[in-house]
Image (cartoon, rainbow, N blue to C red; front, side, top):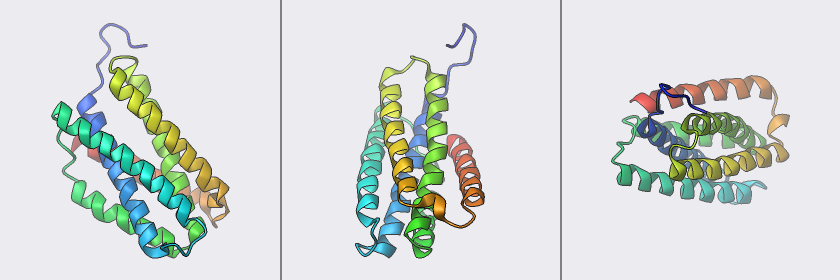
Length: 176
């Protein structure tokens, strides 16, 4: 609970970074599917997760317009970086693609949890979206683990690197 005098969270930054994150996730899945097509045993699961990410992105697209929030200026970078990560992970195999998903979604779960705590009842519409999308992201992580994400060699190191990259992208997208 926020006390009197505690800073009010910057909702514009939250919407901007969440929009950027959902866009990046959609690009990751697009890159994975471009490599895998329907040949991979996880392609159907990736398509399902991609559809959910697209729904999340559409919701944040709407909020950007309704609330007059500018998107991150790093949008072109996330366009290329997300797709490249998706392609690289898919080229390494289905379990590597799932490892990327598990690592990213673990960090997004943490990020969304922090946002919910910061909002603390101040913006019911935004909080409901974040809570709903957080549930989806946790399901994506759990699915990725069930599909062998943690079986990738050096997964703990890979997870830490991906999560550090996510944290950096979050901080940059909040500000730029």
